[in-house]
Each structure stands twice: as C-alpha cells, then as structure tokens.
Amino acid sequence: MIKTIGILLIAAVIVWIEVPPLLEKQYKKELLVFSILLTIGVGLSITLFGFEKPIPNPFDLLTFIFKPLNDFISHLLK
Image (tube, rainbow, N blue to C red; front, side, top):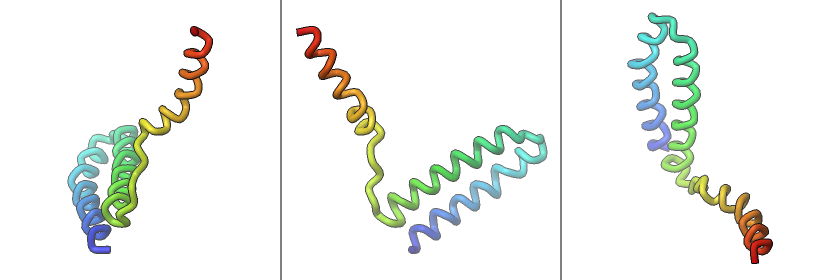
C-alpha cells in the first residue's frame, strides 16, 4: 500500500512539473500523449511494485502468435 502511494506521489510531482508548460504553450496533442504514457507507466508500476504481480513479457505474445506460422512454413519447406 505504501509503495502504491509512493508511486502516485511521484506521478503527481511529474504532472505538477510537466503539465503547466504544456498548457501555457497550448500543446494539446503533446499533453494527451504525455497523459496516456504516464497513465500506462503508473499502472504498470503499481501492478509490478505495489501489488507485486508479474507483468507478462510482450515477446511471449509474439512467440505465441508467430510460432505456429513458423512451424507451418518450416513444414512446407521440408
């Protein structure tokens, strides 16, 4: 619980530092991208450190998708 609060406090400091200049310059697209990436990062950090749950490796998904295709092509070339 304390780790989660710490992560949220760090995210709040990052927002406090980064958002005002973006609003002053009216960088709406950059603010949207910043918000999305920060939200994803905070969510993954809370999952990994706060709840101590493992985050799946993206390479495992690619292996799951392309292994049957690789096996099929290997079988055709033999």
